[in-house]
Image (tube, rainbow, N blue to C red; front, side):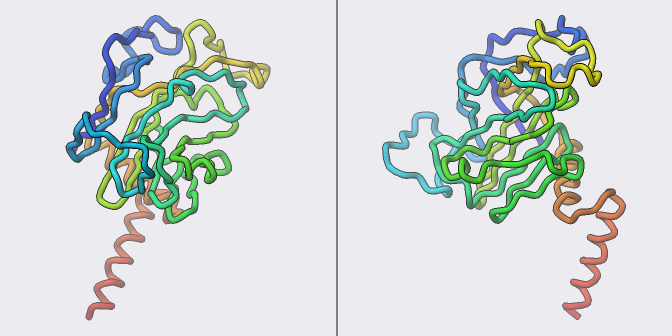
Length: 241
């Protein structure tokens, strides 16, 4: 299964940046655009549909977008970064399930009103539960470091409807840090945050699923996860007998 995320044309390459040497960047990604595309789900939707001025419930059609005001951020190493993502139209997201990944590693899961942090993001990842009421599902990541630059995948599940978006986090080429030494802590840098066109393969989405399950079940390895699932399956069979 492939997940497709659309992006507008006319993007500028950053391949000359020291952070992204020419020829080594992910050829499946593109750089930011000032126009926000309408993001589609697995289900077909009409681009001409009018939502009107009435209140929408979470079960109605929604899309994931990055607000134009959130496409750049000035932050310091060691401070908090917000990876932006909003529902449109603006609907309450308290009842939905939200999953955030960096590449294939689970960052956090919002489920049944609680945030579950990924194994590698303990005490770092969160969502603003008050902002969720206004459809703001942005990821809050504390203690930002250069290693946090990359591709973030957000998945929002409401009933049988699933929406997803990939957000690129890049450091502006003109302000690349030379290193991540202790003396660099606290230095201000300029980030670009934008929707990118990326194809997540079946292997990658499988790793995402495993990483999310490991976070939910609080296990530290795939082997431990598989053993736990086998035990649960056997116990289920015994209960049926």
